[in-house]
Length: 370
Image (cartoon, rainbow, N blue to C red; front, side):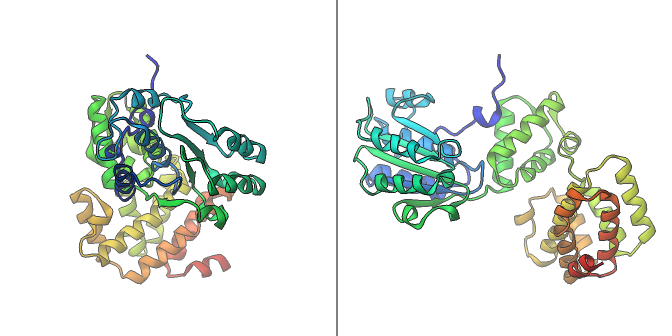
């Protein structure tokens, strides 16, 4: 049987299955239930957090013969027909490749025709910010006076590129990045359904690597499941992700805080010999300094960090050994060097320079001057 990617297999089919966007799904469900629909919606936010999925659910819900408190029932003939990707009443357009004025003029001609076997014809225009100026002008006329049987859903990752005239004619919903906690819960449910065993710590690593994107998280999980061959472990996740283990991060900062120059250089040498990606390591160092700052300043640090208890205790102990000003300095130096590491001919030498500069108390501007 052909393998279906996890993010496709477990795409939400109703509003209740969408995670992390309750402020949007509840508002949409209420509009549908009350019959107070808008003719144009704008979905904004980062990639992979549910914009297209919610647009498809909305398209089903407005046409559902028996919607459940605004959410599609999934059982009626209309819902089943709209599950298909080629239904004539739901038209998805990728503006990245269909961004000319002629493409929008074609839409203007077709919106006149009534939907077939449904209440509404729904146009989903993805990456709408890619339209040309003339295409936006053509779309504007349609948004001003659309037929009653048409709903437009515009989706974009770069809302600042949209003209104000378009923004003013849409009901806007801003999608949020999904928390590590919710992503971990989703991974747990999916792997249980797939009968794949796992370590909880591995799931948290995968969820954190997804950086708030559901699609990215599930794509990473797919890769790690393929590599692990049956059980997803922390070790497998670290190997596939190239992420730095907590032990390495704690050891690095212990050496840096104690100003053990020789020990730090030897430690970097060990990492280099194992083939560690220095760009990933620097990103992890910056994140670790931030995590220590959270431990030092927040009453409930695990509310933000979502770490295993034994790891959290080690983080808190290390955070107590250094002042907050120094942690901010480490964050600045390592966060500002990620791009430089991608292009340098000697990532190891740059990492050593950054590490020693941070250790000796130089700030990010001093490092650049040197």
